[in-house]
Image (cartoon, rainbow over all chains, first blue to last red; front, top):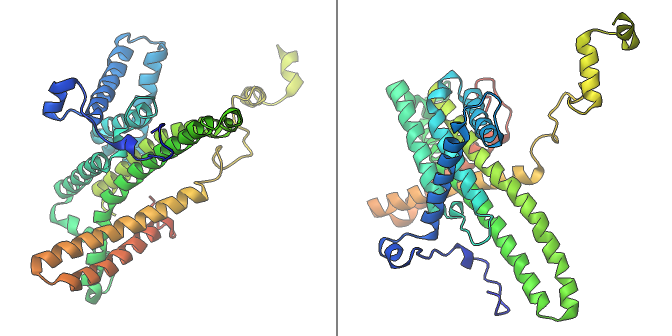
Length: 250
Length: 106
């Protein structure tokens, strides 16, 4: 990218196989590798952090306890007492997305949440779970969700179709939100970083001019850290809201 | 002991909370709202509205396209479902921004 005068902002999202010929033969890409790393980090954090079982927690234990408590409170506040049942799912989802977003900000790493295949896969999992929970709890009564009480029956074909499209748009908007935020952030990083390299090519004046985009990238990194945590939170909280709808139905 | 208590007056709870406020450990009680800003930013709202509109439209287009190739009626169902998808997008935005009824607090 540094060689030419063009900005290849999307090249960073291309997948390459890792781990040599073994990885290539099974299609083990950077994305898969980062997923394994983030899962391992979650397990390590909980396993090592909680191994001390101290009454007064150390740093790692405090971190593990805080994240656990944060997600646990969110489940109960958003879904209600039934939310405890869904806590393992929400916690796994939250940690997977959070670590994916945060690890993606490290140099030489890869952001798997910047691929819509991944985010849509997660969102599809959520919507299948939500629909399954609603059907299991309410049975056929679930379909009354698509027709608000008191609406004129003559309008039912229109209302039901629009409600079903609105319901099906949930996973789409859920996945697009996460994917778009991640892609936008990383493209901005790449563009400003290219500016620095181009400036440096222009000699001494360029070195001074490169300070501008460099400063912007530093500020952007802080902002992206916020976005990474916020988007993981938004994904988890929206899953909770959908589960609340499924459990309580209106 | 009693002389100290007469200094600032009030109950123990009040004095403790004043002391904590002085140290910055407690938010002042006058602020009723949330501590960090007031609600989501305009940019955040705009982004959410855009995503909701586009995703509902995309689902409408996908359904229309799929039904068309199933029934071999290429343009007509697509036309219908684009309109319905747009309507569903507006419904999503209304749910997001419209007046909150008490049954639907989220």
